[in-house]
Amino acid sequence: QKEVEQDPGPLSVPEGAIVSLNCTYSNSAFQYFMWYRQYSRKGPELLMYTYSSGNKEDGRFTAQVDKSSKYISLFIRDSQPSDSATYLCALSQGAQKLVFGQGTRLTINP
Amino acid sequence: KAGVTQTPRYLIKTRGQQVTLSCSPISGHRSVSWYQQTPGQGLQFLFEYFSETQRNKGNFPGRFSGRQFSNSRSEMNVSTLELGDSALYLCASSLNPPGGGGSYNEQFFGPGTRLTVL
Image (cartoon, rainbow over all chains, first blue to last red; front, side):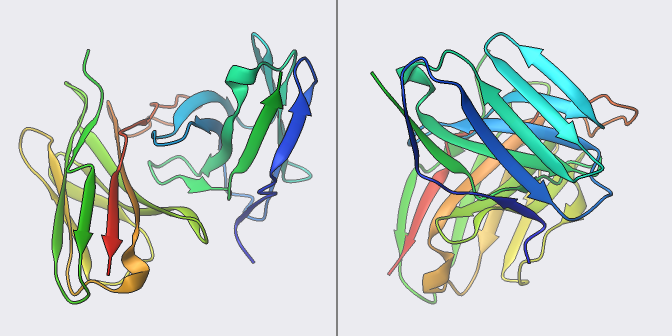
């Protein structure tokens, strides 16, 4: 079993929809929870990070961490075609080593 | 401010050969990490260097090695290439390793080197 599980999709939604992306994990030692976005032929770029449990909001993006359930989520409101990308969750115990989910390929249809 | 640069961007090698990939971090960044990305396994951590010292290593065979120079530039080497080494190799740099207590030093990724082993 992988340390971090993420549904690879693909996920296709109409423009303006609310998108929910999720990851589950098995190692309770993870303390930092990140969401990266990766466009085709590019490296991943950090969208948001959360330390320990809780919610964090940044514009149209909201990240949630539930450590009791070992479950993290990313919500995208008012989705735009430019949000079409692969979204990767990444977890860390505090060192530079990131453990990534498989990534979910998201397409927002105009 | 220039981002993380990786050279070459594309590389084709044959089985049994060796390859060296290069990464130049963002100016001022002292931590460099390497990752392998494949469709089957996703992004996997290879190793991390800080101030020319390997601080962390992933679960890869000894054929994968790396080093960091005094100017923070880093190289990774793969010897005796296998077909399964075909992947996108990503380098990421950050200012320092995390200080703990909730502070996170963002890792900035380069565009990667696409290695194809024939």
